[in-house]
Length: 435
Image (cartoon, rainbow, N blue to C red):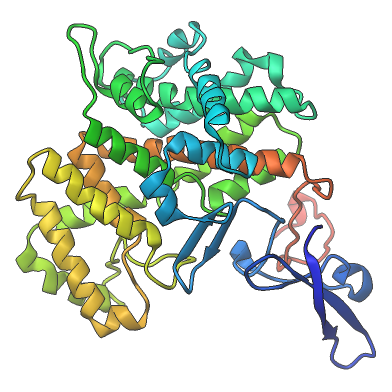
């Protein structure tokens, strides 16, 4: 552990003489954490924290979130600055290495990614094993998990060079897999990657181009896609990242770990939130119906939820939402979408929610999902691809977290404990003696 000791906290068991002084560990910023690793050995008790909302599961130098202040830092850099000035490839290098690259480092890293964008040709036939109407996340999860069967020359996780090659392969190939997943679903030919294009341009090209005619990537849409990728690149120890780390703690290969992260991201409470925003706006239907909808949200018995507002961590305005809002207007202006009913609904809903005491008092501010769904819809992405796009962006964060975990000498296999509330020990009864 590289955290510094910053005092201690004492736990005493009522009715006994037993107590234990636990060291408080301080990071560079953020709250201190109590080191409870000796708690069971000394006092015979565990802590109980469903969902691990109050538990630090690891030490990390990658991403910092201050939910109360609305702060998101990648390696110390504010997300607002990175989204404004850095390319996604720069951000990928930063997350993986810890520092922004100089010109030569960026050129080499970019070339390394471009050199791995193609897929093994046999993977084309792998897609044919899926039904055409399969959910894209099911296909993505399956194909990424299968990469270890095609690229088993770099699966020694103790070898730094193997880890480096696997990182390049995953960052480069997941966009290709994602685009081919979409093409397979709509019955169009797979488009091979073009290494003369940037990361975001190449993804949009593979998604939209067809062999029959030339396709030119719109620079405004490419810039928006690059920004979207940056905003979703990492987000500390969320459910999918924790899944990647937990799978990785067993020694599983990186392709299997990322596939596990994709499966976790698929959940509607995690990666599917922007789909839920679009469904909510469609169900509202019209600006005039917003007051009735808001009334239902406030009614606990209605079970109607306001999607795209509030966050498990952020208790202030999600810093990514402000950037996404601006990006939304840039994309709609570029595409000539002046009177989009969903945008009108979103703007009015945001205004009401930010002024209504019910939502303000509960700190239900717009999050990154609120506008991202509208942007992706305007760019032509079907809602079934929204979470796939999220996975494309988050792959670099997962790989960075996995790599950090592997290189941590204090890392152990993940093994949470439990509060058991089932039957106590009992004896087996033959079936003829059971009531």
